[in-house]
Amino acid sequence: MAAFLLFGPAFWSFAMSDDFQFPPVNPLTAGLAGRCPRCGQGKLFSGWLDTAPKCTHCGLDYSFIDSADGPAVFVIFIVGAIVVGAAFFVEFNYQPPYWLHLVLWIPLILILSIGMLRPLKGLMIAQQFAHKAQEGRLEGQGD
Ligand SMILES: [Zn+2]
Image (cartoon, rainbow, N blue to C red; front, side, top):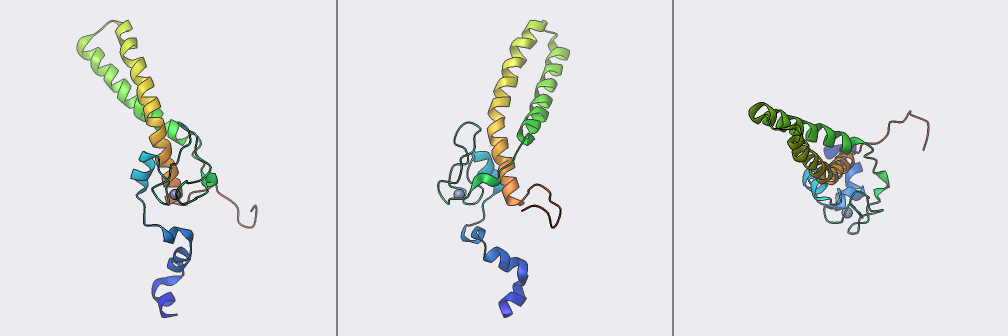
């Protein structure tokens, strides 16, 4: 009883949950590496961008995952800033022909976009898990 009063009900609801059985995982490193957000060991993805049904190490059910368009939006912002900045720099300093811009920037856009999508999706899923983010609900409705 003294421990309950000392730590409060929020701590004990955490202590009784499954999350307490696992050491804290840094959502940044676990997400970027494509690892399970709870144990940091199991694989998050079963394909390039497809998520696995559950963690192979701790059994966490991945049905909560709903990253939607979030990773793509961040990829658009980040890759757009990099490529537009680089294109302006090259144009203002060297004035190359337009075909050279196409040869430079189209492959760079493809490489950066495809390369960043998976780590950013993992990062968003890990942040979703860490912050217990979910769709908004009205009290007294739904499941
Ligand atoms: Zn796991």
